[in-house]
Each structure stands twice: as C-alpha cells, then as structure tokens.
Length: 129
Image 1 (cartoon, rainbow, N blue to C red):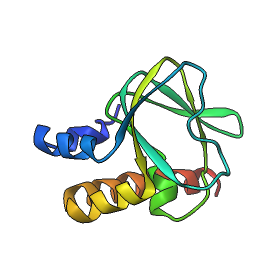
Image 2: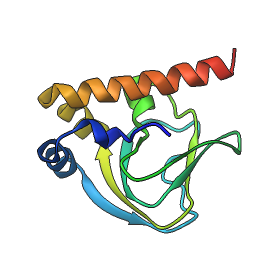
Image 3: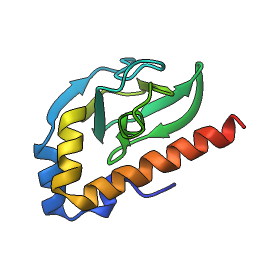
Image 4: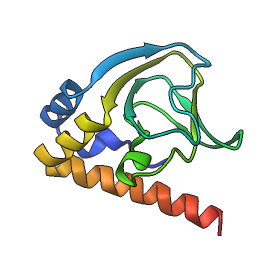
C-alpha cells in the first residue's frame, strides 16, 4: 500500500492544507465524484474509505490521508472515474480555485499534487493501451 498523500507533509503543512478547504461529512453509498463530469472539486479523506470505479468496475480503494479528484483538475480534463463511499466519510472539500491557490502558495503541495495526478494519469493510460 502506497503511503497517503498527507504523509509527505508536516503537521503545520497539513493544518494549512486543511484550512484551505471545507470539512464535509458524507453518508455511505454517496458518490462525491462521477465519471465523465467536469473537474470542479477535489477531496482529501480524513476518515472512511471509498471505491474508485471506472465503467462500474472497482480499480482502487482510497482511505484516510488520500486525495481524490485532483487528477482531472491538474490535467484540465473530465473525470476518468467515479468515487463511491464504502463507509461514512469525513472529507476536506476543495474547490479547483482553492487547490490551485494552495499549489502556488505552498510549492511542496503543488509538487505532491502533480505527482499523484501524473501517477494516476499514467496508470489510467497504461490500462487503456
């Protein structure tokens, strides 16, 4: 299991990242992100887990400290997967603007965002080639 997105940051940086977004709670079964929709938000999971699905098939599960929804924002593309809550979720919700502003204000965050988005984009491309 890869380390979480948050594991690259100090507690102070995590506090700054967290304060740039809005805390939200979602019930089990909810889908905060849908395949083939525009990229207007991203989330970091505080608690709970999600299923990442392409064409209805699970391709990954994400949990606390993981980010989701960033790839489409970074790549300026439509969503490539849907995300469904496997349990009640506590999330930090980011608008695309908040994510981009944070990436500029905090270069380490911008770099981590780019890395995760690139890894997911390449994995997605490899699967379809």
